Image 1: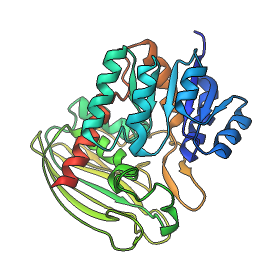
Image 2: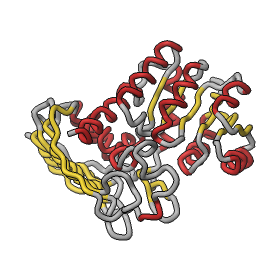
Image 3: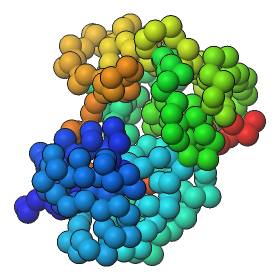
Length: 330
């Protein structure tokens, strides 16, 4: 199978992360950023073409199989639609977008063009998360009663520069920091029926939204649960966890990044010896979520040629946006 030709729009930290992984599964043909220094630096490292606008890239590069959108959240829809309308498949970083209406336009553009639109959901590949998905799918837990999601991270004031912290390009803490947890809520337990929330900004005067929140969920499957989140964990990330209480078992996936099976008591199942997951994404003075972009790209390549392969679709990405929009509008 010939290697796929891939381009990146957005040469910031996450774009650099994508570039590192593309070489293993394809060929990085071009990168693009409106800041020349970023575009030229990344193109120099990976020996590819550099452009200063997505329009220039699309006009010049005629053999691109996939464009990876790594721009600020509020620009994902604009850039993905341009790529799709030019006849190129798209892999969009999380979140898919920050408005449900924009997500619907993205999906419509993919349908019109006949091209594929995927979204990055790398925490699905954490070994404990994969295991929980498996036993839920096999009904090994029976009826799910309740759940608890904790997201206790650190984002200092100096993190919020440029577009970060703005409503128009960032969107909110649930979009930029914790959308992966909302994705897992939907992926593991199904749709949300009702939400109640309280939010507050305690420690970040420069940002336009909350730094802390508490959410109560009533799920379509009858279970109830909570999401407690903050970026005020002192000095470092503390915990990213998902606990499930069910008819036939209780388990907690914890650690800093949903990377450890901390508690496991399930009827007729021994605690599994799971493989160690990847390390978290390191960005200097702060850390992100698990670095599973290698698995994202491995599965992307399969999904491009096999429509039946299980890979995070735009429709699933839109569900995350719908749930977050529901929380914020409550």
